[in-house]
Length: 220
Image (cartoon, rainbow, N blue to C red; front, side):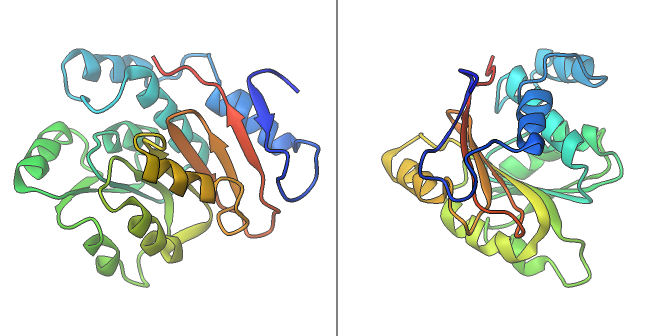
């Protein structure tokens, strides 16, 4: 197996990496070819409009959104990548949760030229009570540096699309969060997981056995 990806030895299911997993790693996570929005992402970073993450991380989040093409994207926590992800899916509804009025105003300023982005000034957990059965399921959930990350995930799962993707930031930012991530990584309840070092991905698929991968990607 290539040195940039390895599979957890005690993972459920087959020992052979699936073609779809290989494609996702090689052509989404580790893709080096330029995308049409990279120049726009670079400009936003140069102007200081995307302060939360490095430009490489925002390009990664763009590629993930471009690959999933969800109808509903949700970002919870202190992040600004909802703009980057909205650029990949102009027709998607994009919701960002800002826990304070000041943060909400800053987010609205950043997203002012992206009309598909809605910024809600509400508690991290309150968002899911606002979603109704008529809303489309969440195709892409970005749990940024949310204070109640575990509760957010539990509340979001019933609203996720069957093949949705969850991005978890800062999986090694502290011991408690790392232990929580370890309990999820390779869990049958959350499907195929990808550990990118400080970012975790949970690819939901109820029809598959759980798989757990460690993948090296560029962060800068």
